[in-house]
Length: 139
Image 1: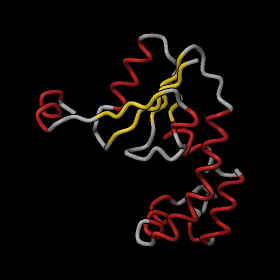
Image 2: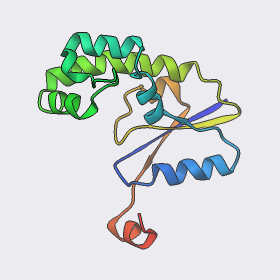
Image 3: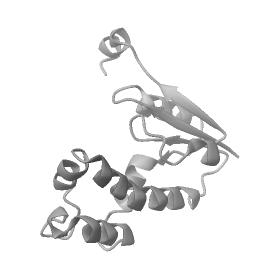
Image 4: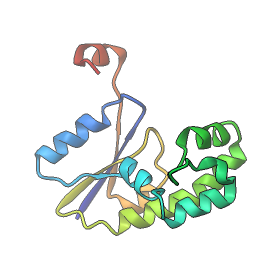
């Protein structure tokens, strides 16, 4: 089975390339969605995050307060490393458990191949567009 990891910056074309692979019959494993799923209410990762960063990172409904957590981790590299130590193993485990089919491009979050694509993909593709491409494609 061929696994292709797609990575690139914001608005670089990852979604477009992923859609092209899907049109060819490949199954997409959207790691952005996986990252949201592993911190849903009631998950072990969310409990660990609340334990590490305190109840202020939870909304009243028990869901992760992403804005509050962003404030904490993007201003403190050590806090970000603690968050990644919780989420990255859970993401890797979930992705490894997905049964993709004949070929599965995996879309990563912007510029972060945190699941170590050299261990989980046969090849990695990096997407980027110049300003000319973005303006002419509307993206």
